[in-house]
Structure formats: structure tokens, C-alpha cells
Image (cartoon, rainbow, N blue to C red; front, side, top):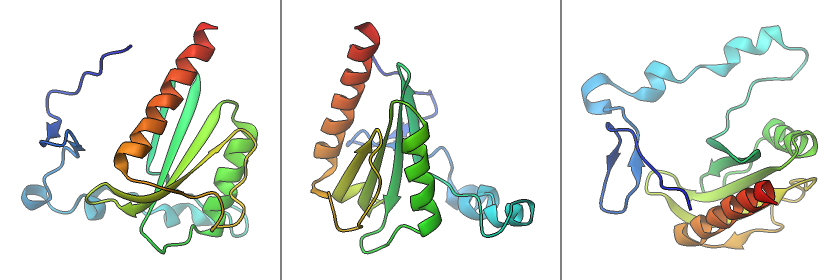
Length: 152
């Protein structure tokens, strides 16, 4: 089992949520000051192709886990669906978690997990009702499988 260390400036609360190292009240809104407006690259790409962002990614023992968080009732844009489908098709040992919930409070309403050659398919398929502990349980299981595969 590996021990997790955090950066000395990480701020955590009683729930052990790691907070962004940015104080909006002191230095302004992070999104306005530092989020790259991805549309500035549109002219460099052909047709309707455009940049997309993902909310989280980790690699562990050669396995990749991508996270995309959506507010309840929000549909994933077509381009992002295509991106994630292609990622799963072409990146060996990749998994994608799509979460529906409140990002500000890390409240998980439901989530889907895609691995290997899975594709997103119908938005209403394959969702698991859940909460943050259930999602963390799956992520821990993913990490154990990655480490076991590496040590096999």
C-alpha cells in the first residue's frame, strides 16, 4: 500500500478534501485569470474540431484514469463524447469516470465508468447511483487492479 503525501500548501478540511491553492477573495477569480479560453485555438484546427478540457487525470502503474464532472441534468457535448470514445479506443489501460453531481461540494449523485473499448453510447445507460464514498471505493479498486497488473 502506498502512502499519500500532500504538498505543504494544500489546504484540507475535516472531510479531507484537498482545496485549490487559489484564494479567489484575495487574488480574484481563478477561472477569469487562469482558465485558458480554448476557443483561441479554433482557427488553427480544421472544421468544427476544437480543444476540450477534462476535470482530472491520474496515471498509476501505466494505467490512466480520466475524470469528467458534469452538473446534474447537463449533457456532455458531442465533441467531448467523441474525445472520450477515441481516448478509450486508442489509449491502452485507460478508464474514464463521468460524474453527475455538485462539484463545489463534491456531492456525487451518480457516475459511469468506462474502460477498454467501451463507448459512451446513450446518456441514460450504465449510470450507477452513488455518492462520494462509493466513487472513491471504485477508484481505490482501480488503483489496486493497476498495481496488481503491474506486479503480475
